[in-house]
Image 1: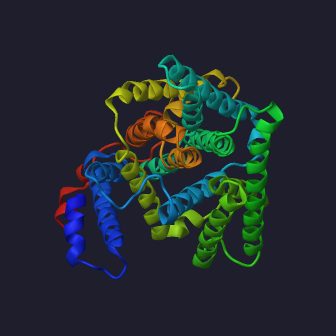
Image 2: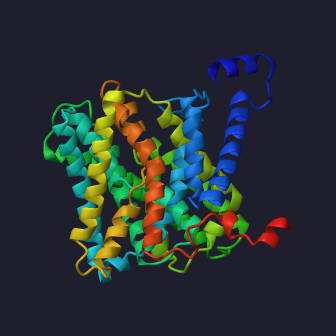
Image 3: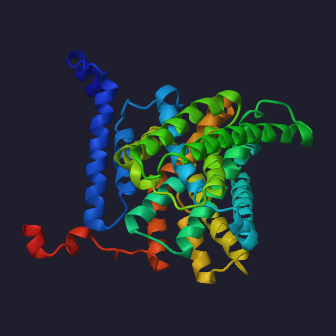
Length: 418
């Protein structure tokens, strides 16, 4: 593909640059593939997006450079921030006061995931610092993938809401710990207080940026309607500004957006209509995020020797997610079967995990590539396979409003002819 692009670049010089043409065509192909895959198999569109990105990455697509930087990194952070802002806005804090077992489930499944992945990697002779970093990355589920699966399946119910909340909380823990750990990877061993200091800095700055974002939007809602397009534009612009500023001051842009949505939910508890109002712009940014993740992950330096490590990581992570949710299920308001499907729905890894890997690569030139060599194949595998598992879990829980069948088969013959 690189040779084809080099020949193409000799005679085609578009005003916006060749990468713009490449990405436009790639996203068009991804949109068509996602639609056709859902139409003829019933799988969520995100699987089609990821498959197109994977094929482009394996073919040598030159529109994405690893490690991420510049515009590509900002767009990925912006897409993640928007998803996490919406995810945080779906969690009322009073829920944990009335049902503290949900918070216990979150803490237990995240801790078990990190511990299980760490010891499995150490058993496979992976270096301690690399195993620790990959274990922290594995904590994070993917609210982005899960939200798309929920949208495509029309899901609603206790398993759907619990899985989304637990995925968001696991992302919160991973973003905080990785942002702090990435800044201390090359430092000598420190005492516990010095180790906790970076965590406090990341959390503090992210809370401040998130609070400013929440207060600004709350003020806007005093004279603007949540269903207005102008309100949606204001939301996107404020999140973009927070994304650009949070990391600059030592915080985490996705974490600040998540906290901003969480705080706004407490200040403005009424249901939001913004996801519907964001419309095509949000959908395009989300699709770009999934395609970018799969392109970058597929372009990684694949090593057959790492295949066994990746499979062991994925199995240990899946068992820990399901086990953690099940162990703390007593008194949480869901049945044991629902706990099983909740843990399974938390399988996907995607954009958040890629951002976490990017942080480690940027912070350490020696350990970063080793972390990426294990994490990137796992992310690529679980962006596709995880979306399928989450879809299966939602259908088995009986919370989808649409039957799992090809949409083309569901169209009456007369309507299809018309």
